[in-house]
Length: 185
Image: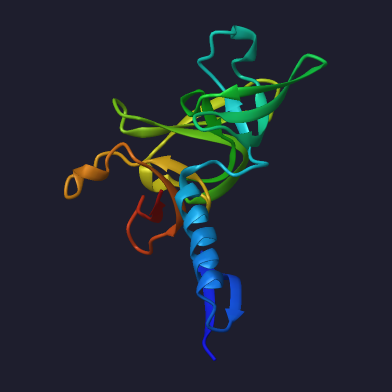
């Protein structure tokens, strides 16, 4: 009797034994759906709101609670008031724990965002967990993106067709600075 196993990011997500075509179709559909969502920020993730027309929402931290076809549903507080709103992906930055190397020492920044600055050719890393946001510029090889981070591909010369696409970081590639194994959505 055949046994079918589905793996995602090295973890077995489903197993079944038998020759049921319908069970196999269901397994593939579930896994394909999860794979297609690889570029979405995960439910429960912290995000920073920015560039919104309601200025009082800009700079506010929230949490992803759901999705629509073109927006993330985000819960956040404005003062004492709890809000829930549909926010476009371009108005969110994922809040992560980032590792930054500075003069040979590693620092973990909790509740930080990173954005590539094309003109400086460096990352702008902002620690948003404190009352005041602190920002620093970091060279490509001095910032380690964590597994699960969502990033936009930029500056590929040998495969420019992938530039602009959003990917999920699977792991840092050994040896090369600033290179990662990623999953396209």
